[in-house]
Length: 105
Image (cartoon, rainbow, N blue to C red; front, side, top):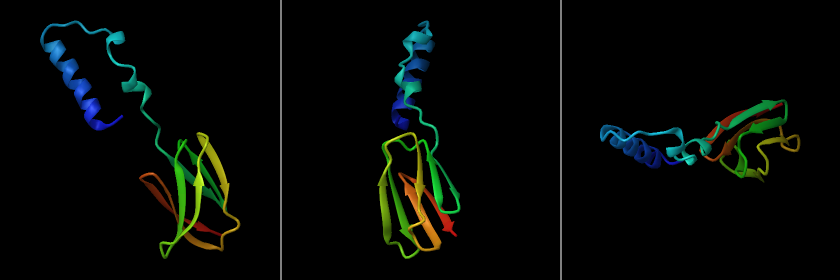
């Protein structure tokens, strides 16, 4: 949920409380809680990459010169990708605004 929307909800709730309006849990929009997403995690073991919490995102893999060597669409909350087809070396894995340097052995 965008930060501005959260701020607006909090402002409205604070205003209503200051006016003496009683708030109940069912009055607070469910989207404020339902849209929270766990952080994306990227772990590497040898040439296998495990990605969690990146459903419906795109994984881009770059070599150190900045050339994209692979692009993969994530279609589930948890994904395992074998990068054994790439030469040994350093790469950058980027998912949304999360990036991680990895070394493939």
